[in-house]
Length: 310
Image (cartoon, rainbow, N blue to C red; front, top):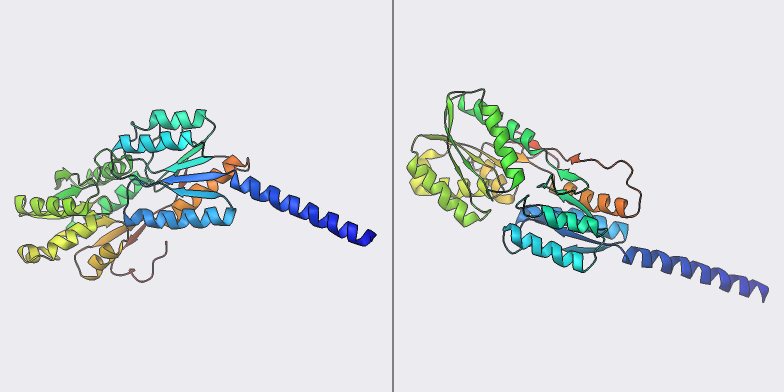
């Protein structure tokens, strides 16, 4: 009988500890807010969701319907009202979310940015590509491909996105060493593929001597590849030098088909995973020193297309 009582007590203690652990896990809810619904952020979601499941915390993937800063502000306000434990956000308009991120932090909610930062918001850390340096790498790659001269255009996404503007700054910094390379246009697309195709078509028609195009956001590469595949622009294939960001299937295909010369490949799965891991560590008081994390970039072209790793 004594043995049975001890066994029962042990079982009750184990059950109580298990229940306590479950309750602790359920008390942590992590929300991840991308810029908009595009494939790049699907990879971020994959990494973030895997980390949340492994760490035993609740997870919410909250996707804005557009790239307007006000939309992300409303999402943040809703998450604050629901008292989530932590928020990771890829920012569309850095200035617009400064106040609401500070509001979240004041409410005791941990906030990190990933992929695109709002540096003056009070967020605890940024996780992602150091975009200025990635832009320098991209600019130097283009300069080498052009032999140091020619007209180029920049096709970006949301004009107010800090990460994209940092990439553009990096490109300009690199090209400053090449006075015979001229940037003739910087065009926004709001990260909409159809608009990016239209913008690219207009650029090529307005600049028949255009030598290169930078695709700063994930729609840039696929858009240029689609345009160069058209009969109207088929003579530009191989002549127009194209460098893009992110290894989406259409961008990779563009390299294979000879429309795109190089891709700056980021690590979105890693961004998502680290965002959740960092938030949970902060919430549990296990973070140690909190500082920005550079997830890096790899230059991918036809020579290493089948061998690079994220």
